[in-house]
Length: 244
Ligand code: GLP
Image (cartoon, rainbow, N blue to C red):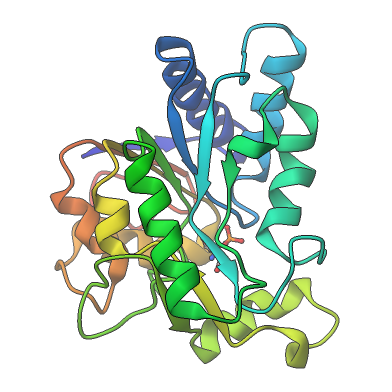
């Protein structure tokens, strides 16, 4: 594991964007795994700036997002499809037909999740998977549990996640209670993993996830076993880590 502490959010974002840009330049037809949340907004803005500067070409890139709320159609302003269009896809030359997000509008959870997992397999797997980190250690929407979910699955969101994400909805009652998410197994099959986290609110979970025990109670901790993972945090999120 490479663990990088940057001085602030801007440097975290730029460092992560450079790793994604390098992946695309090395293999223009690569498959990216993408994430939502406040944390990656800055790095997406940096990738858009690279594209506008003419140094990055997304025309052959394919992408798979980690997760989507169950019940939200792609045009809902809190859906993750909407987020990706707003922060990245609408601003670069990626072919939207090659961008994939689990189908939150499909009420058949088993069918939606199985189709998504198969689409990733058919694409040859993910080359570089970007991850944010939930306050409880979730990655994608894989919440603390007794086991690590193997494949794309439908999860019941925990109260802490519903509360954390309610800041983005009109009221907490509007937050969906379930989501479709790549499983921990799906994430671990990505050839490279890139994790970003910022702010003092993430300091304890960053320490637990990357320097604590490996346990499904802290889903991100399994990444300690991934052969090619880079974690980039700002100084606040890294403040409780042994090397800080
Ligand atoms: C959500 C997403 C995660 C994300 C996490 C952290 O629940 N499903 O993929 O990593 O929140 O979000 P933020 O970056 O806003 O702290």
